[in-house]
Length: 188
Image 1 (tube, rainbow, N blue to C red):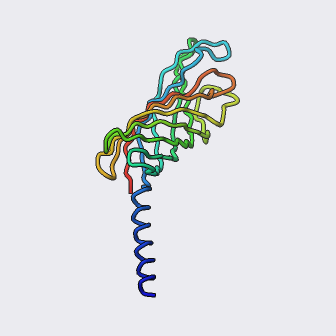
Image 2: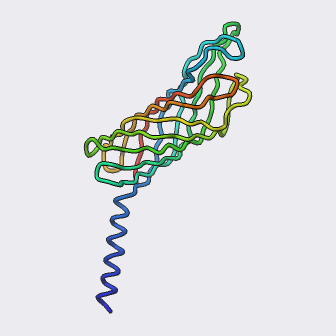
């Protein structure tokens, strides 16, 4: 009976150790360089657009499936948008959209610390701060992401990513989100 109990304790301890090596949870934050490419007119009014600098913050999990392959789901609060310059206006108008984003990245490790990352992202609009009247703003945004990740240590990482929006920001404007993200994070 003692051998069975000892074997069960060793099995549970080994399973917990393996599980800890397969899944790591963490946090990340960084800067967004966002723009909204698309049609250069809104309801027939011409304008110029410039990108904005904003931020993202959230939680990550890295699930190691193979030695050189992992899945990294994330839950991020991310602000995106653009600054609009209308020809007849005296001032610029900033359109800032805040999303709850859920990227799911496939990570292919080229080396022990460098990874290529690609995957889809679903985002849900949680707030909109703007001086541009985007009526009927879409509350859902779908994007494709691609980038690189570098583990500086076992716990500290940096990432660079490009997010190409595939959904129009509004049904009244033919513009999408386009974001370059630079992040730093910590895995526990």
